[in-house]
Image 1 (cartoon, rainbow over the protein chains, first blue to last red):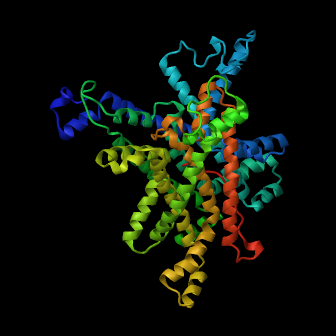
Image 2: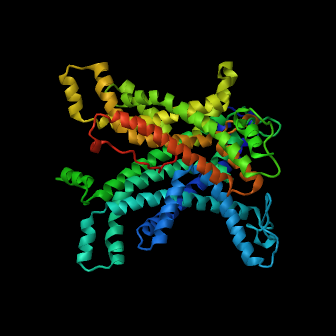
Image 3: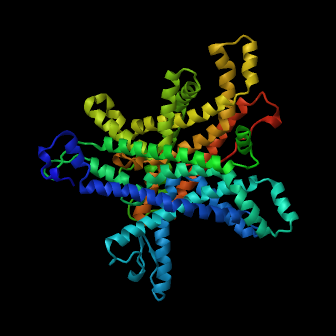
Length: 294
Length: 268
C-alpha cells in the first residue's frame, strides 16, 4: 500500500507492521468487519419485525394464529441456538429449492429426497450453478440474515409480548372509553407506549446479537473468524513476503478486543437512549428523572 | 445390524469405546439416536464440571465486585466484563490458540490443548463471570434488615457471611442461576465447532448431529433428535435446581417461596 512496501524483507519494526497490516488479504479482513456490521444493521430491524408480528399474533383473537406464535417462540428458545443456526441454513436452502422445483419443473417424476441425496432439477438450483461467485456469496449472506432474523425474532417476540402486557391497563381502558376500536387502541396507545418497557429486554437482546455474530463462520460466510484463522496461521517465506509464526492467538485477541469495544459502545448508547425514552413516562425511572430535575 | 447391536457398538463411541468407524451408507434412526445420545455425555461432562467449579469462583467474584477495596473490586469487574462482553465462540478460539502457544513453552500445557481440559477451563471462566454477575446482583438486594439483625447478634466477618449473607444471596440468586445453568449446558455445544479438535471423531451431540446432517443432506432428522435430548436435559436441570431451591427456601411460608421460572432468552 505504501511506497516503501515494495521490498518487505528489508523493513523492520513499525514500518514492517504498517505494510503487513495493509496487504490485500488484510483488507479482505477489514471488509469482513463491515460485513458483520451490515449483518447487525439488517438483522436487528428484521428480527424486530418478526418479533413484532409474532407478539401481535400471540395477542390475536384467532386461535391457530396464537398457537403458531406460541410454538414459534417456545421451540426456538428451548433448544441450543447454534443447533438452530446449523439447522435453518440447510432447511431454508432446501425449502427454497423445493419450492422452485415445484414451480419450475412440474413434470419431474423422481423423488426429491432420494436416500441420502437431495435432488432438484437444474433450473431450480439456488443460486444457479452458472451464477458468478458474488451471487453465491450474497445468497449465503442472505440465508444467514434470514436465519438470524428467525432465531432472534423469537427472542424479540418474547420481549415485546411482555412489554405489551406491561403497559398499564388504565391506558387501554381510557382508549376504549374514548370509543377507539381494538385496532385503533393498539396502534395509537399500546404501540407508542410499549417501547419503554421493551427497551431493557431489547438492549439485552442487542448485546446477545452482537455476541452471536461470530457464528456466521459456521454458516459458511467468510467472516472475521475465517480471516483470523487464515491470516494468523504460520506463513513461510516461500509463499508470502511477510513470513511469521503462528499468530492466531493475537488475531483472536484482536477480535476479543473488537467485540468488547462494540459491547461497551452499545452499552453507553443504549443507556442514553433509555434516559431519553423514560423522560415523562409514568414509571419509576421517569419519576426519578423528574425528581432530579426539580 | 439390529438396534441392540448398534447401541452396544455406539453407546460410548464419544468416549472412544466400541466401534471405531462411524456408521456409513444407510443411516438408520437407531444409529442417529444412539450416536447423538452418546455425544450428550460430553455435553453433560462439560456442563456439570464447569458449573461446579465455576460456582466457587463466581461467589468470590461477586464478593470481590461488592468489596469497598478497589484492589479486589477492579479485577473482579474486569474479569466479569471481559467474559460477559465478548462472544463465547471467540473465547474458545482464543483459549485454544493461547494454550497452543503455551504448549511450546512448557509441556505442562499439553492437556490444555485437548477439549476435555482446555474447553473446560474456558467454560469455567465464562460461567464464573455470568454467575458472578447474578450473585453480585443478589448480594446487593439482600434486605438491609437481615444484615442489621446479624450485627445485632454480634456476628461479624466470616460468621456473618456464612450464616446470613451467603444463604440469602443464594436464595435470591437461585432462579436466575437456574437459567444460567441451562444456558451453560446449551453453550457446551459450541466446543467442537471452535478450535478444539474432536480426536478420532469423539465429539459432542451437536458434532454427531452435524455429521449426520452433512452426510444425509437431511437436517430434519438429526436436529430434532438433538433438540429432544436437550429438552430432556433441560427438564433434568430444572428438577435438580428445583430441589436446591426448595431447600434454600425451606424457612419461608409456602406462599412466599419464589417459583423457578423457566425462561430461556439468551445466547452467549
